[in-house]
Amino acid sequence: MDLVLLDADVAGLVQRELNGGLDDSGIAHLWGCIADLDKIVPLIDEEYCASYFAKLRTLAQVAAAPYIPTAI
Image 1 (cartoon, rainbow, N blue to C red):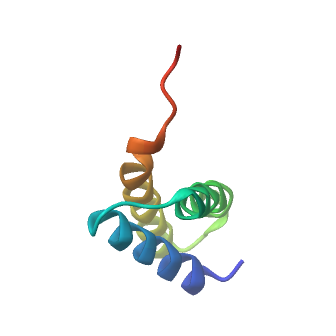
Image 2: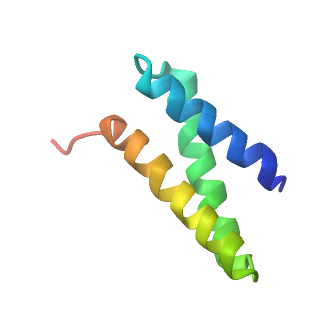
Image 3: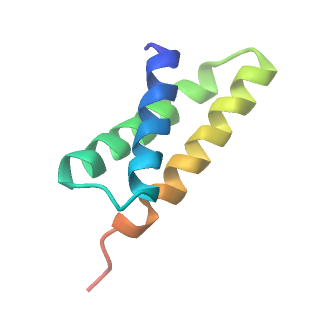
């Protein structure tokens, strides 16, 4: 997994969310990035890098929060 690309993807998606919201493909891509971060963060053995990507995951989760389906 390319961490630089993952970082750039999340940054771009969060920026799009802040500038007016994400379309369906953006939402799907953001959730895909979150899933990738969930897989990769526990495997990072360098403390600073692991901390950075854990925070990036939190940022992505906050941006994705409006798109969590509500329970019926």
